[in-house]
Image (cartoon, rainbow, N blue to C red; front, side, top):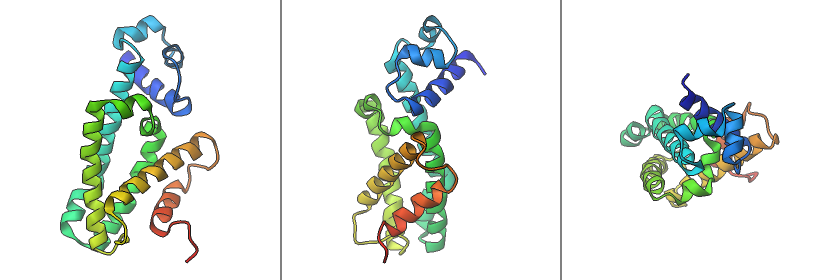
Length: 186
């Protein structure tokens, strides 16, 4: 693994635990000096931009590998249920790796990232709308609400892991059942 990749990996892991870490903290986490870090990234914002781009690429990859477009186009309820389960499992796994990107203020204010985020979110919401039409997801709420609900569940999952409130094992199922059944008893 080259130095740049090592810096990115270490920074990503460190930011998941300490989202406000300084550039000096990130250099130390990568076991490099600040001068070495600056050879690859002019500053913290440049490093975050790269990590944000990686996060968005992973989101796109998760959508593709779960097959959301194919499931939505096919209209089969069983295929959509399987796709939803796969997608949420991928998202929870990604929250371990890319969790900081869910709430980082720099990434949330980047116009380039926001445009790409909206494109991916719209694609995800189109899948939720198809799942509603197939009877997989409740149809009495706007599909965009389901997208926001999934986002909220992923932030909650990330925080539960980060703070040690819940173990990693079983978290996918918890996110899925919370989305599908909510917190009610009926």
